[in-house]
Image (cartoon, rainbow, N blue to C red; front, side, top):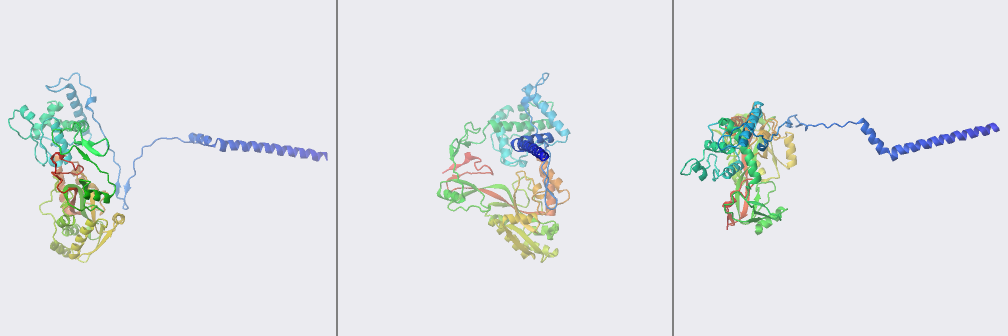
Length: 545
């Protein structure tokens, strides 16, 4: 009996001790996971994790065929600040120059020579040939670059005439005429301009003409930056109330009389509201694309002032399969496109027809001696000669744009009249884009906004994102690159080489370049000369009735 009691006491003791241990264990566990769990997890992560930043490049994007659409390229951006160049204490500057000018020019020349030796290319916007004998290259620069060049000349009082043509030379100012002993007004040749710039920027006479041109090109760019920052180039600025444009104080052409002191702005968020305000006369001027998808329609009496754009309409081919794998078949299809009718009738003269994927106003435009033009009889003969009669064609067009569908219907009609069997698919944009991506077409009517310098690589390069037809020809990428990167005076020759291949291969059919339009109330304004991005260009010539 006594033995059983002792056994029971021992059992209770052991159970109690076990219970205490379990309670302690649960308490520690509760503290570790519930009370301090987040802190312990952080400490554990720190002990086992090492963070090392790695600069990663964007992934290469390809299409379904593995063709590269977007890749990576390393570029360098270099900034040259003449004010940071240390003066050469032993330098004796030439008459009219400063030590700072000649020190900066010498340092810049060494830098440019180093870049050239390393194969690094650069360009500048100075519209003068890169090598002597110097000549102006206005045909190779944009309108904006010509405007900046004129601002540069006017800022130095070298010329005050506008430069609008491809070969027109600026006229000397009176100050320049006196400096060179000229009694009458005369043109400012490029050679004379280079002399003025050498003196103005302090270029040492020991520099050759080519070396001086290299340095002056960069210094010209820095001068433009200062003009942009310090010398106001536009007559108006946004007023403090954000409701109008007010006359800018200190405008560099303040001597010119402007038609108004301020321009009232009107905020419009809906198309129907814009139409109503314009028709009622509350708005006097609007900048629109009358041929755009879902373009707003205007009524009443108004005047239209068109300006050229780089919005390009073209007929594309599938060169990977089907009829148009053959360049002869593509060249035959060129004869089905009545560009002039599309531009004048369907696009209501808000476009200009073109034979090349560059604007006819560009200095690069060289259609050749015997360009392929609209010829329905010649088309029928070639279709028969190439044994293409009855060939089935799938023709894609975006159904959301009335002008495009009308143009596609006209082209499809001419192709069918010549013997093709055409299925014209008018698709919403999403379906249209998907069909292009999958190559489910023989023809398509496309539109794209080209760059101001007419970089055609995205459209016609072998890796171009817009080359839906997959066209490729030996040497095409090199020709496109040479055309884009060539010095201004060499671009025309390189463009001619590319367009010779283009006319032979006929990868697309250029149709037209669209115009932008400025609408004004009838009889209220005259003398407008808008350009893309600046409807107020040459505002001083406006006449308000």
